[in-house]
Structure formats: structure tokens, C-alpha cells
Amino acid sequence: MKLMGKDITPAKVMALVGERLAARGLSSPGDTELTPEGVEARVDPLSFNLRALEENADASVGLPLETHRDGVAGRAVVIAKRVFRQAGQIFINEALGRQRAFNGHVRDSYAQLAAEVIRLRQRVAELEQQKVVVAPVATPPPRVEAPSLTVKKPVLKAKKPSRPVPAPPSAPRPTTRRGK
Image 1 (cartoon, rainbow, N blue to C red):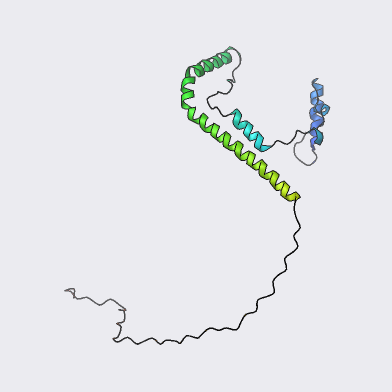
Image 2: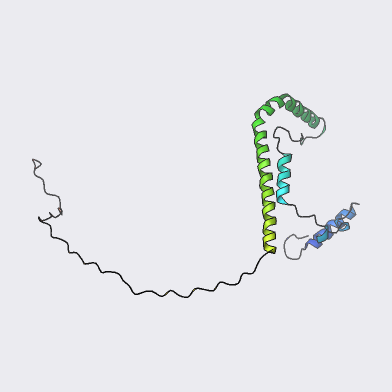
């Protein structure tokens, strides 16, 4: 089966997967046909994020213990992790106390902002329903300029300086051996 090209459609891939599952005696994905009606409802990001913040507000609560090892060695590793966690939980709680408080404040602030967003969305929807067509405002007639009444100011001539202004030196003066 080639995985490159335009020949492959999702329906063909699902049919092949269904055949392989049926050969092994498992239920095929064709049994549960996905249709637009069967798709899960769209998740509201505001409520989803708020729920996630609530679930993870306490940073001192550990994640589930697991290991990649099998058998007795795997069970021993999980037991060692559990003992280590219980012994260090006092220190973990102390270290993460401020983080727990901060996470609570963030969660509360997010909940307030989410409520405000929902309220503003409802208000916008109401205003869009009440949209009133306003008659276009007539443009005012163009302004007519009045004749200019400005007074011309006399031009003043610059006075000549009483003594001549020295010209800047064009080149440095040559110095003698004595520095004069």
C-alpha cells in the first residue's frame, strides 16, 4: 500500500483498517460511521480552560505514578516512588503553597473575565438584532471663502554691522620652531 499520492482517500484507509481488524476478530471502525451529526459538540474554550484551571489549581497534588518497566522491577519502582512522595509531601506542600494561592487567583480572574466575555457577546448579539437603519446624513454645502482681509507687513531690511566680522580661518597658521 502506497501512502503517497492523491489515490488514497480517508474512506479507503478506513476500509483497509476495517478489513485488518475484522481479520483479527475485532470490531471495525465501519461499524460506527462518523457523520456530521455524530461529531461531538464544539467545546467552549472559556469553560474548557476554566475547568482545566480548576482541575490543576493545586500544584502539590502529584500526577499518577507510573513506570515503563514490567514485572517485579516495575512494581518495585512504583512502590519506591510512592514512599519517596509520601516522605517528601510535607516539603512539597511548603514549597508549592504560594503557587497554589496564585493558581487560585488566576482561576478566579479567568472566571470573571470569561463571564464578562459571555455578557459582552450577548450584548453584541442584542445590538445586532436592534440594528436601526439610519438615513444618510446630507452633506453640508461647500464652504465659500471670504476675500482675504490680511494686512501686508512691511519687509524690514537688515542693518549692516558696525564693524566687519572676521572671516573664519581657512587653513591653520604655520607654526615656527618656537611655537609662535
